[in-house]
Length: 292
Image (cartoon, rainbow, N blue to C red):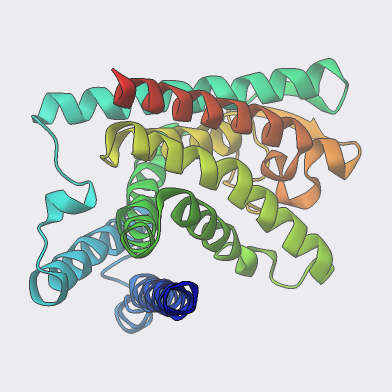
């Protein structure tokens, strides 16, 4: 009896491992197509897409089209199955607003803590800052990334394994996708550590926001206003990138463990701690909803 069960259990384990490997491979292909397929268009017709908003909007439209193609012809699923649905437009907008509030308050809290310990010093208000020039681009960029990572990758891996495995793998892939932001300026170990931190704080938190509603809008709002407040508002690096002249001109200086170094607060132990606490609270809230 025992001898009969063992091979069956081993075969089942092997089958599950193959399913997971296939899901990860599909996710990597989807990410490659979603991120790189539009780039020849930017190179060939630069006059057609002259602004960051136009480029990110094109990325977003392409990601939706790619998701529809995969869902329609390969996976036999609708766009709403990937988290793009909502009970109504206003419900979706309300979830986006909730996420934007969480993202804004989280980044503000981190920045205030950095200011209290002397790592962030606000120097002046930039009256010439034009937030309207960058905010729309960051909103559509966040929606684009959420479609890729929480819309497709997280759910594809979850269907092949389980929620916890999907959250961990999709979050690490999210962090790894930001490695090119360094352009080789930092040692490789620093790059890996920073992107791993991003995967743990942003990746896990955005996954928790998606899982709470099973729609992308809260995660998209959180993602967008996280970037808006870190970059155009407080002037700190966003995943190693600067977003132009910010509303508040400030100085970020101190140990990389606290400030995140050139990558910005996303690689800071302060932001990591706060995001993990937020993600845990969202996870607990989801579990309590399932119980009741």
